[in-house]
Length: 375
Image (cartoon, rainbow, N blue to C red; front, side):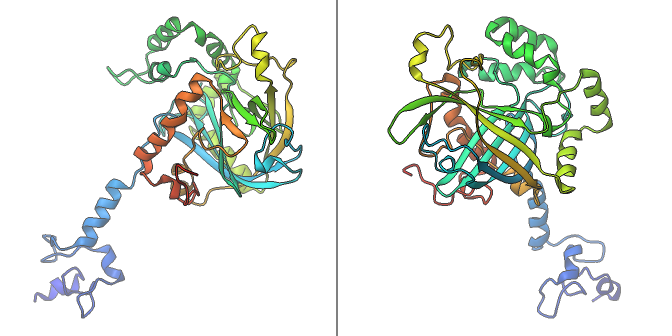
């Protein structure tokens, strides 16, 4: 055997292998070759698997809310809601449950600047003794359409043109002209509320209407709202553009650095409740997600607080693989007849199966190993 060949530590029986022909730690840095310059042996399965893993390790982007940041903490019930719902973690004052939150940009890629004019997602996963409860919110209280049939249309209107992959404002405004119900959403999006500097200062709204059912079987419509303890803050488009140029990940870094410095990020949870019988005298449909409820008639009721105090340790496993769905409900919470909510109810799980596999509920962050359709 050529002396130089062995000294390279690259041959099948060189320094990269022991006397049994097994690859040792040094061989991790080298391919198996016929000579010091190659060619590479086809039997080098370690090399082939390493390259294949690299090719396949990237998870498919979410269809919407692709760019996101996560944090962990707990939710503490302050005002028991047993009068209105059987939800287990809302029955007793001071009861705490672990939570995971993913903040996101609704229409985005991984490179979208955090401060761009956009809808911010605010999704929370509650890890209760009875199972997982998901609460999906946006920082704007309304959506652009009320029928799920038009959801793909509204998202496509905000995406780059399929012709040249560039943002085309005409596509969006053509959509607005075809969907007059979107005006409420557009007005809010193009106010300063559309540009946020910090995820620590945005609200969260369920947008859709859900149902609470108590132990006696009585139902009430419910809308959820998060409000930051430090107050809601937005910025002008000029400041948003400046921050986007300086650091596209400004909001995510701000959230991470704040928690890393030992400072907790806190939000209060509030609900609005409505008797379904009220529908008969209202001038609007309370299940219409393009509208808000009058807070004078249906005031915000405090429920509890959420403390975020821990950063993810593995972004891919804990943030990229987290799977939310408005259908992840527990006893005492139900879907309403809200058309958009009904449309969303099944599509999330289908999206997760495509993105992270059919057994996504068994992934640690989703913590539903014993989940089955029957239970």
